[in-house]
Image (cartoon, rainbow, N blue to C red; front, top):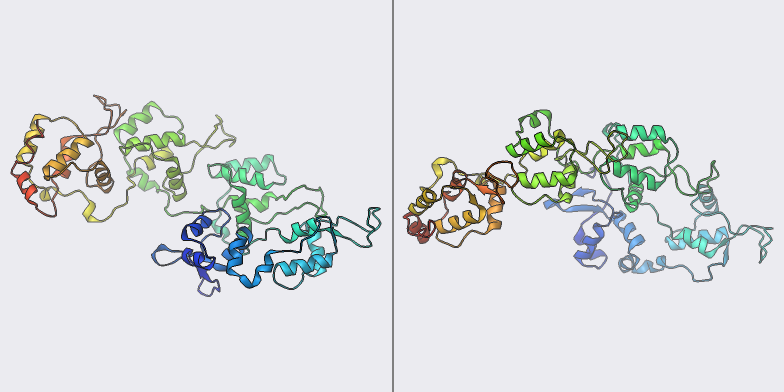
Length: 468
């Protein structure tokens, strides 16, 4: 949330599209890019609010054509004088061109000297007395070297709220890694460690660069040609600089992990109980997806959805990771049954109010004569398709759409299936099935309007074919 005294100018996706003269879908695609500045607050109706200055900086770096449309009087900021890449320039000239490029005063020579020592600006390509032609009397840089410096990506500096109390303790994996490898880290190694620590693929390099710009990951401790020893060929970080980033709190903690008291009240179904008795070992994310689908009476849950649940705290983070030093070694993130059960055995459908709850016994309609005859003749299990047909006939219309019934299951209007494929019960079933007792509360629910067809059904005239 933005502090009350903040001078940040906020903007929305619609305003971004209007400012840079692009479509709303284009602005949305910009927001999806990893390096795009994250939202700073949430407005009315959950509208995401962004720092306009940070967005302007990002557009300048990544979409210069759009930036030029929004800043027609500063279009020369996007261009530099043409010339041969090997043309020689003095440090003063580089400062002048950088000032022109950034629409400000020339960069002082003393500042550029500091940038050379920090490795931001390369050391001179030519020096006095180096024996090359043409002869030079002072340090000089090729045009291509100067332009690479001037047009470099510049970090978007934001004030970040430091909260050391929010940092997690280093995991056993990180503790063991830094004990064995106490040296400097490359950005690629940080990406790998961050992915392993959070049970996923290595973090994208563009994302890490964005984190550096936002102050979430410290700037590098070492750079090429910084004059320190040992010399390095790329940017490097000390472990102490990286640990606060690797141990940061979850970036999207919307829901707390279930407490011990909550998990104790969760009772696994007979299917889950039997499964874990027969297979007590570790679970992959794919296995959890399959079990969750079976438990909810549908196809396996998408692994991308499970990853969202992990970030929200609904599914615990993996107990085992590749190269975590434990035995036996694993090739992918793995969960113990105890860690997965609270997720698998907890209903996750959002409650939408009393209207979605199953009706209580006193509110149920009397079963029609036709429905009574059907269940007397066919007392066995019901498929979802059969329930759809019975529901339609009971109300004097076409069968209810299966997608509608699945929605009713998620809302609690129709009970979850009593039987699932591979649930270990007999007889085995090939699809989710319901007992008549489980389906009747839905089929006999109160209806909002008593149509002529419904009245006809209640007298037994509309379901004659159901028992045939």
